[in-house]
Image (cartoon, rainbow, N blue to C red):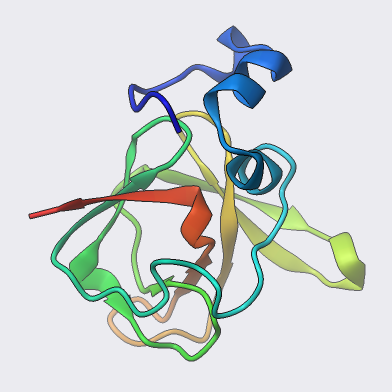
Length: 135
């Protein structure tokens, strides 16, 4: 990623997204891809700070909400207020809830209703979809 300011997806062309993101980031963030389980930089990451969208820099998750779900991707029980949107994803013969950045509409991962209290949510987010600011 070369820039971190919030981006309006309608203002960027596909070519501009390709220039702005690495190949792996583009595949996940703009083409709704998924990185391999247990392969991401943030799966076992335990530092305090804020996880941001790798495409636009918007705040997504506070490290305090991260937990080890065993799913193979970084998992959080809550997103920052109004930082993500969700939509139904029926790809791959499944019905899941896709999580997207509310600032730039990039694909982040999926959310499930089998997480811990206080929310009961498990946001499984691709590491490549995030950048981290340590506190």
